Length: 427
Image 1 (cartoon, one colour):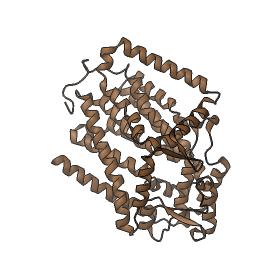
Image 2 (cartoon, one colour):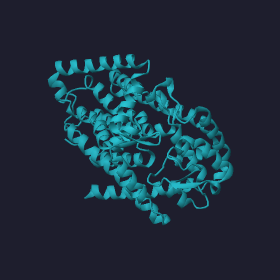
Image 3 (tube, one colour):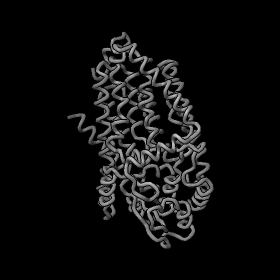
Image 4 (cartoon, helix red, strand yellow):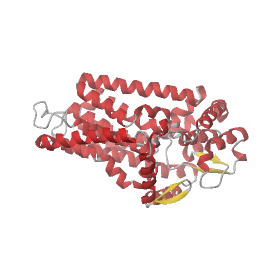
């Protein structure tokens, strides 16, 4: 009962905090941001909506979604901050299905002519858009290109700090496995898009919290609350980009730090608390928005649930069958000159993993909790197959969880080894 009360208090506190923070930042007049927004849109127009690093499809940068974030800022009516914070409106001048290709041009027209001159204003209220709590104040001081620089400095600083912290607390092998895992999912590209970055910030801060916080070590309830809050912040900040990493990375670090005896139980239990935080806060937005504004977002929610559960994806404004879309993505990937080298690296990795499993059967069996964590991302992909496939150029980075878990298997102690403490949480 104590744990339930603590969860309810935390939930209500987060609802108030999330809503208040958005209302405060949407009180900032759009005119104060106008110059930096115009400069930001010019940068995106120069680069294009979806530039590819090295021409590689899976290294495509999502300037379109970043431009949509800017559009929401330009469209916001700061004289009605509650409405702006809840409905998250964006404007466009194109009615065809490929309006997103003109997102930069549309946003520039919005800034120059005002929202009253736009063909349509639409709501994106099914998400919280909590990133605006950071982005909108930053736009008072910086344009998009400078915000990117800040983003690179902060994300790389966090990654390097985590590397040295893991080096100190877990040893060099695990620290280097962490860095290798980041490289395998092309982490150096991540800070180039704000949309890619939010989950990495939450995951990295969650890892730091699990390693550095004395509060989280005191009792089981604090660990459960921590994962509940991490899940809640993920739904607040993220666009379904790579939410799985905010569960997987902190969870693996916590288990390595605390070494609980019943590790598989820990994985299940903390995953449930993370999911409750994630789902409860997200669905709360769907009901809070109409309560505060009188405008419903449920039609958008229903349409997108139906789409994500369907077997159709949209590409180039046209519906594609799943098989055709997979074939097209495969052709794009296989056609790149770097594919043979990448395939060779993957072959070596899989060969080593198979060799290790075959030659260390007992040991790998005793690390079942890591095998379970490895399945987080594939299971998510199966449940949200439409979204994961349609946006594969960024959703694939969630595989960081699976890669890190698999690479850890040879380097962490088995359950039967002496350093597995018996006085840990969740025995």
